[in-house]
Structure formats: C-alpha cells, structure tokens
Length: 377
Image (cartoon, rainbow, N blue to C red; front, side, top):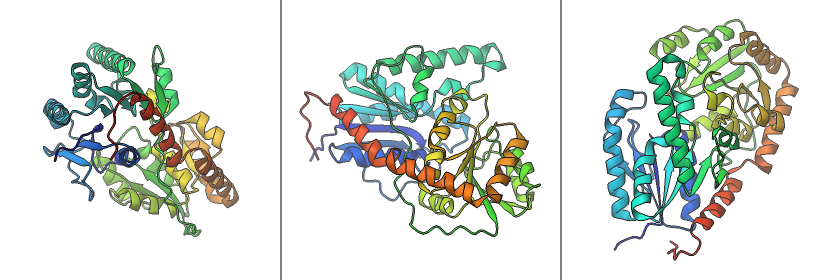
C-alpha cells in the first residue's frame, strides 16, 4: 500500500540533539492533521526509540567532525532529494540552511510548497568576517543565499522574531515558533538548599563562557557548577575535571536534562558577543526550559525577552565581576530566585508553552494547504 505524504520534514542536526525535541514536537503536532515523514542524519548518537516517522541517512558524521560533515553533505543532499522524489510531498519543511538546497530544488522542479525553518542565520553565527578576505567573501555568499531562499520560501519560521530584523527586507510570510518544551515539570521541586547548584548546558567548547565561568566558580563557596553537553574541547574538559566545585555529567537526553534542571537552583547560558544572531537576536531553548522548571536564568542574550518576563538576570559575556555578583546574589537571596522562577513559570504557562506554538504552526500550515485536496491520516 502506498502512503501519500503531505509533509516531509528534513533536518541534518544530530537525531538525539536538543534541537530535535522541537522537531519532534512539530512532527507530533502536524501528524494530528496530515501524513508526515521526517528525514534525519545519523550524527553518531544512534536512533531514537520511536522511528515510525523517521528515515535516517546512516552514513555517520559525528557532531563536531567538520571535515567529514562537509565531505558527506552533498551525499546527504542527494539522498534527501531522492527521498523527496520518491515520496512526492506537497510541502517540504527544511530545518536550517544545511538542508535547504535539495528542498529548494524540489520546490522549483515540482511546484511544492517550501517551509524554511531557520534556527540561526548561518553566516552571522558561524563565519567570522574578521579573518581575512576569503572569510569575508564566504560570509557574503552564504548570507546572500540564505536571504534569497528565505524570501522565496512559502513560509519562514524562526525560533525568535528578532531574527527577522537581520534581513534587508522582512520576508513576506514569516512566523515565530519558539523552542517551547512540553510541560514536564513535576509539582514538587527537590532542590537542595545546602549547596547552590549552577547548571550549564550546551557544548563544552569556546564561545560559551565556560572557561571563564570555571575560574569564577573557584572563588564562590557553597556553590557547585554542573555541566552537561557534548565535549568539543578536551582541554576545557580537563580543566573541568581539575576544578574542585565543578562536575561534568556527560551528554543527557532531554528527559534526564529536565530532571536535572528541576533539581538545580539557577541555569546559566552565555554566548560570545561576536556571534551576532545569538547575542543580539538569539533565543536559546535553555531560557524556555528554565521558565518551564521555575528556574531563574543568568544570560547575556534575549535582553528584551528577559526584561519582559522578569525571569532572570542579564550580564555581559566577558564581565567576570558581573557574572560572579549575579551568582552570589541568587545564592544568598532565595526569595529573589524564587520570584524570578515564578515569573518565568507564569510567562511559560500564559504565552510560551508548546500548545500555543502548536496552534500557530497548524494555522500557518492550513494557509499553505488552502484549495488543496489533502488526505488526512
């Protein structure tokens, strides 16, 4: 029996990555009305337990292995294009720039609808123009490609509306679908008041403030830094292991991470100010997860959002004194961190939860399917 596919979602990030949590939520939401298939890439972490909606490109390219990834990327694109041609979806949902080329080609050849789901502006986030002429040219090429395709997509989605301000002209059909998690918070929180737990989640690498944070933590007593994420810098990992009040807990799945967040006192998320989309226009999934867990956050991004929701403390990326003061203030003032946590939880319940994001997503897809004969699952 041939199953007609309405939508194919394509992503090249690791299947078990935290960004996949958002993609999984989108798949579940879209499946309520349409027949949906996901195409993903094995990036060295294996497959999730539930693969009934997922077909995997099984040529492994472990995350952080840039050379192998770049070599295999055209092969992945070919695989995606073949899958699209075989399944003939009415809509392709392409996650980020590294999946867009085969999806855009399919759109142009077969008149399908294209949804461009943009988490970051790639050039602004990953290509430094301060490293010479070649990088400057590369930046312009990638940035121009991203802008042109975004403007030709039938729908542009981003995790934060501020990203739309980075375009020369705002794309005509765009919506914000934040990385809002499912509500997994338990009613009873189990935080230990004897040791103040600061949680850092994300990649163990430069440009996340972790190196400086380890030094800062050495001067703060009755406090422990818990670190979770992929290791991309072995020297930095060695420094973590040598620290007396810092622990590396490995790479956790989403549910393990949420449990750890629930049992922590504050979450810290720092991004290098040179990364324009993160510093000026970024919205980290950590912020919304902290809000869901009633956990205050210390960060240097999403300034307007943090001020609006009053869910955390804003600091400067390279201001060690400011970061240290923020940690000590929250450690010594339980009422302050409780208030920030409650503010975040309230905003999460009222505006920034997945059911509200789902409603926006389905409404946008309905407009794409207007006047089309869709077979519902």
